Length: 267
Image 1 (cartoon, rainbow, N blue to C red):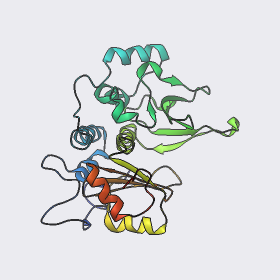
Image 2: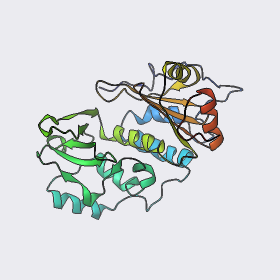
Image 3: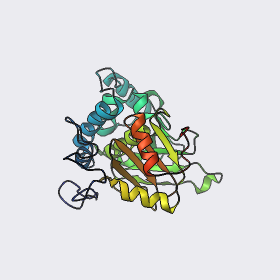
Image 4: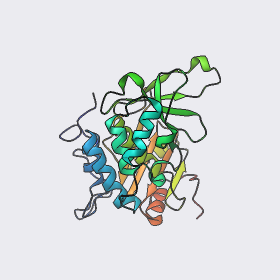
């Protein structure tokens, strides 16, 4: 079961914001509180879609519109072609933002309704690919009747007999929150950057930013999300730090707080 971050135990709960001043809290605008909205978003489908709508409007800068999703007819056609029922969470996500490639496919690829397929082993419905084919994300066929089923990942290995579907996230709606957050870190170089961290970098990350309320994933690793002054960061189990600023100046502030060989820092 996922932890409930809405009342207590949140990584953000009671923490002092590293750059808090005069009542300012990082990630908070007059209309959108990223940390609070995310805490609700990890709790279920409704909160997930509300978070994505707010994040898209206030961080990506282009609010969701009526033409950003696929149609009911597109999804019905996919069901008929595949001979399976699409879970409610998958239909809702595709209807809401499935055609917004800037939200879902800057790096990895969310498949369209006509591209969804069942894997060769007839185990899972595949809906997402890693950008170089190194992994796929899917939903086990025997859980398609669930409204918000678990999501699994399958790595593409040289030894095909060793490939297995392994746990990724407990709910599909939570996976879409992760997709929107992760793909936002792969947008324009002006706003996003990458650092191969050392121990000092990770210490500065923890000192200057507050951990966001998102469950650790995948199984056996710890991907952590952090928030600062108009700054969003992800620590990939100590192997990489990915960062996004709301503006180019916000990204430069991240680089100054965590010095290092940032990939896109040409200053």
